[in-house]
Amino acid sequence: MKHFVTPEDTAWSEQLAENTGSDAMPFAPAVVTRGRTVWLSGATAYPLVHAHPHDEAELRVPAGIAEQTRACLDNLAVALRAAGGTTRDIVKVTIFNTDMDAQDEVNEVYAEFFGTHRPARSHVGVHRLVGPELKIEIEAVAVLDDEAA
Image 1 (cartoon, one colour):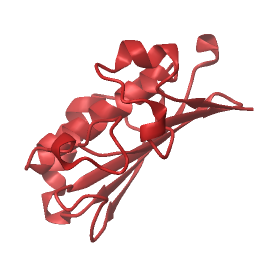
Image 2 (cartoon, rainbow, N blue to C red; image 1 turned 180 degrees about the horizontal axis):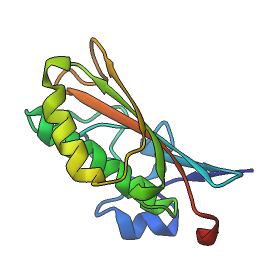
Image 3 (cartoon, rainbow, N blue to C red; image 1 turned 180 degrees about the vertical axis):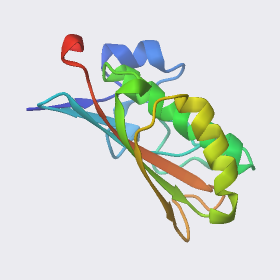
């Protein structure tokens, strides 16, 4: 059994300041599967829920990779909270980065975000992301505690 976390879920109204509706999104930001595994879609510095097709006015992002990394991680945390978890439930992270020379900046923000928690991680250099101004995208997998069930 799968539970797709969508903007209609009650948790979304509490987690997101603005709800553009699930019809605007061609994917679910999080899916919870049997076994309490949460599959978090790749997050960028774009607003977590935004119009599709894209509205350029809505998609302004910070220029720096550190600020974009922070926005990605914050977006993942929002989706994970809506699915009933916390960042300490994350077991695997995959980072897609268009500027591998800036990975030290990414690692600094990543370390601030996770603190002493150290999920498994892959950091992959890519040519381009969904928007030409985007430098980074981060996806994750989390396993919720049985106590949270």
